[in-house]
Length: 393
Image (tube, rainbow, N blue to C red; front, side, top):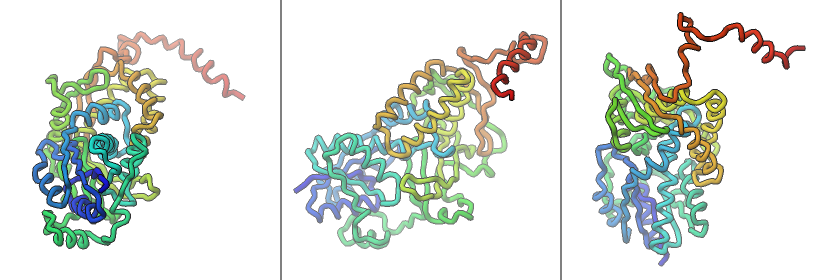
């Protein structure tokens, strides 16, 4: 009997996959990754393990990967200012290569010949997982049951689960497809597929509506050391606690929502709703700090790198040579990115209102129009003539 390691979520699809693979004479070993999908509220992993075993899994691995996810995936993307198509902060995309890494590790430990996932044939995650696995161990077979099985609807899967006594909640109808981790939540399907309709409030999970948020603003200060957030309002936090705290605070003010039609890797456009309060706050603060401490040419060039970095993450190329090379460039840019940014949170908006850094390149005596002005304006005439010389006809 061949062994297969399945990326298991505990939901309807992957629970049916366990049984489906077993019927095809595979020994199924389930792997569950804790990436903070409870967002500080915890996850019932004991129930998930019982469900996997009841469905027919021979063994279940559950790994708390939150610290590794933050240190090795979230923080590098934050340093890079990686945002896909100007809105998506890549929460789901960042988690997939980490899941792939452990699928391969467990496959090696269990001497499995294959790995499997529950992604659909039109999504991005199938690409991210399969490409990452292929980079880490091209000898492993990859099985994608949802792309080939006989079920045509959720109802078919429910009937199948009931037939084999797989313990799932068959009464709750989920109107949306949701993926969540500590860095954010991705929401799609249901009424969201009508592009003319505003997303209903029940689509959101951790953010309050900006129209119903408190009328007074909240001011918050984020302190960075070499591009890594370290303190909130002068108090040191571990990164996991810092992100969870900002998710809670930002969510109270409706910060971190985005509604976009994005270009999927597989070639179609899809409407996606995202919630990412902590990611939005930290990206805003980090970019404002870089604007203060990076020189003009470096700052402008890094914007191009940020775009490419985000594409590589979105396209599932986390383990590529190019992404590794860009990491080296990004890390070099962060040497001077230390300081504190003051932000105002109010009715869905996150705005920088104060900045300070020991590495600041802002010189008041050169920028001011007051009495302290030390800028020699007479130099401007020669500068303009030299700058414009190549363009005169």
